[in-house]
Image (tube, rainbow, N blue to C red; front, side, top):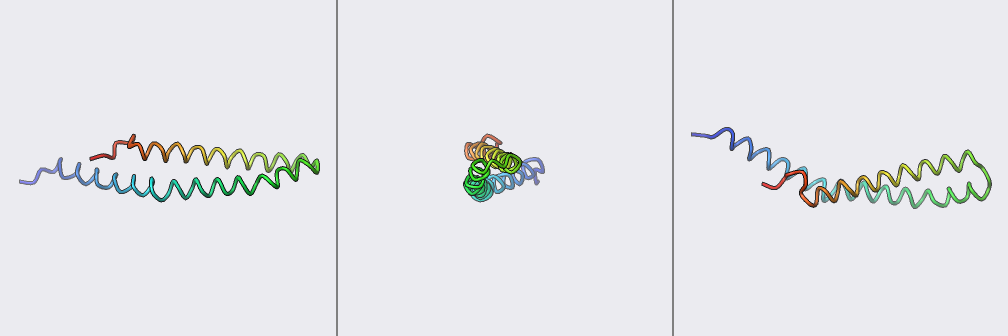
Length: 91
């Protein structure tokens, strides 16, 4: 007879393993790379606005830089947690 509990647990673990693998190997690296590139390209505009003394533009670019760094660090933390298997995806 088919044990439904073990069958659904097996399916759940398999799906969670796939999602963890996709997140660890594809999504997190892409988001982290995009955030890093975004931050790098914001820096020259930030310094230019500071040199020219345009305070409103400077603060606009500074907030964009802060948001980019928060996304980069947050994605890095999630990436590390997924890689360590913290979310219980190991069968």
